Amino acid sequence: MEETDRLLTCPFCRVKSYLMSHLFFRYMLPHRAPADKQLIYVPYWRFRGMIFSSLSGGLEHKFMDTSQQALQCPHFPLSLGLRSQAMKLHFVTPETPGRFLKPRIPYSEVMERFMKKSSAALSGSIFTQAHIGESVSLIFAPFYVEDQVFDAVLNQPLPSAGDLDEIEAFAGGRPNWKIHFEPTLCPGCGWDLEGVRDSLALTCKNCNSVWYPGTRKLKQTRFAHLPGDFENLVYLPFWRIRARVAGIALESYADLIRIANLPKAVLPEFEQRPFRF
Image 1: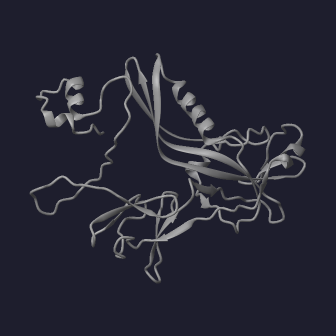
Image 2: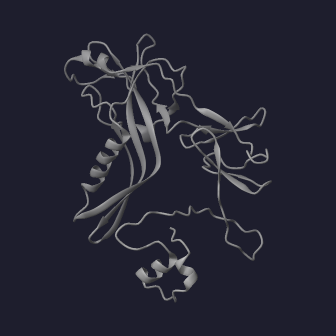
Image 3: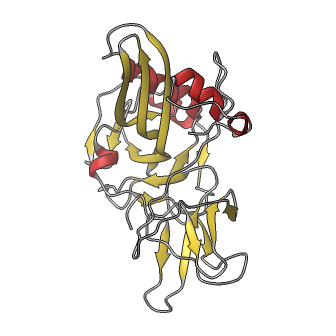
């Protein structure tokens, strides 16, 4: 399975299941350590998505796929480098052997570092920044300790960084996370939901509904479509977003006409139509 796969189909019974996890997915890198080694899995936060920066000269955007250690321990590399992009990731399951260390640095703090990293190459004053994450995940990298720390991916020693006893002080144990498999049956009518392997929303053609993954189960999402007068139409999806906007009055479609100086008359009904992206 690919990292972005969410829809799993059994080729034997043809049952489709949707993969769900609490908050975010947890992956691990493969290792080449000898069979007798006790592996230690170190957590790394990974962000993959777009970062937008508002500058005096306009708007800049940048795609980022980066990682950051979630422990702040000098014995292990600060990031995974290109490994999270180049290597095949595996899901962490309760049956995975090894000692999995618990993150000490929250994702919000690491995200601030990612934002600062992206702004280092920008010139001029940055008014504000925002990120749209395609995915946020926790990746565990394997190591083992003898007289020094060994990188279990390459099975090679790392440079010494002081007392190794402090590694034992980190909280950790066997993984207790599970991937929840939700059957792709429409909660509204029981019909089969449709989608492709990386779909984030599933459709039911029987009761004309769309379902989106919640924390523990699928939730219904409101949707609408623009009418068309042609046959064999292909409909492309767009998210419609109602956002809080500060500093200017942008609550209605009429506000947008006035602020953007659109060549339209401000009709009374435009005052009641909410502004959406």
